[in-house]
Length: 76
Length: 364
Image 1: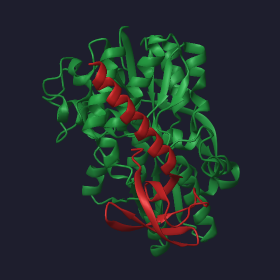
Image 2: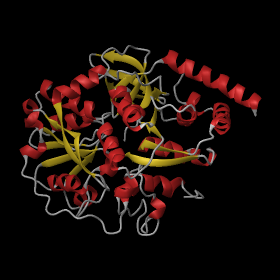
Image 3: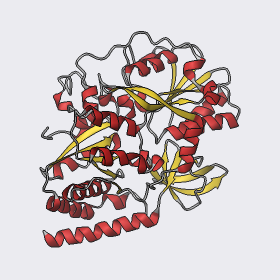
Image 4: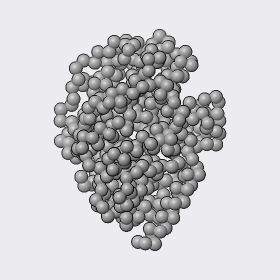
């Protein structure tokens, strides 16, 4: 029910945007994320962007997890 | 960065699983609040790869499942009023109320449309000026700001025949109600990622502070959930209880301020009936006075008749984490996804549906 999917914003027109979700272009609403820009990934829930995804945080999370995975492998 | 495949990496999963096995010494019980997490946990077999020290429970985080029959019956009665078009998300159609379901009244002639978004419902209202279009407003804090936005959009576009039936539910109050009942002893809570994308991390702090339960906000990919479990284990093993965010790419501690602003502009808290849990104060949202002309309950004379609960169904106990679907005598026999009796079998995020689809071989 609270499913939200990452979508890439391609074009913004007023409070709406064209966004690519898994290769399909959909019209989404930016009422909840007025600061979203073209090129941002947003989380889309029932046609509305509910947040802008933070790419730097995502990369940092993956970097830390990879380090942990390597360390766990050494210890096991 | 596509934000999906990266978080399904088997290499990272192996690392996290072996780390959890190395670290987890204390027996602990974790609840995933959200039905979306239940689906991830079952689909990827996460329960089976965790150490025996960890017990996982599913919580009440499925809006369809926790909607009480008294509210379902209102939606079904509303659908039978002439010139009303009901718009709803798909999951609601098959849920049995006391006497029938939306799907059944649809087959008897009621006009019910499954929509992907409130944007579709608004367009439908604009295209059908002689009809009344009612959106069934179910969902948690993730969805409520969207319904609020739809009301403001209706005002902006001067759409006068759009209404909502507000059956929203708020998550932190129901967690408090479950913990206050003392029925379930929890050590860790997997907090819902997309509810938290809206409300932030602060509204969960009372759980760590008042009940000593470790809390971690998780995303919905398998790596997210394993990372969350790893962080919960780290808190348990170091004797800590605090709120942490594992889903940092999607959740800011302060939440989405614009969404919260719209929600507060349009709605105010009110009590709600939760299936299996009963009335919980301040756990729902009703329209504020200045937006009451959008309220379907005030605009129409709804007569749902007496409410009945399905005999033998234990969805209520399952939603509180007191029982599992395997404890239900109807599960998999009289109650299946094709012919569901209780809502937890209807919703794709319900515990019974997850057990039925993915639970084979699972040891209670």
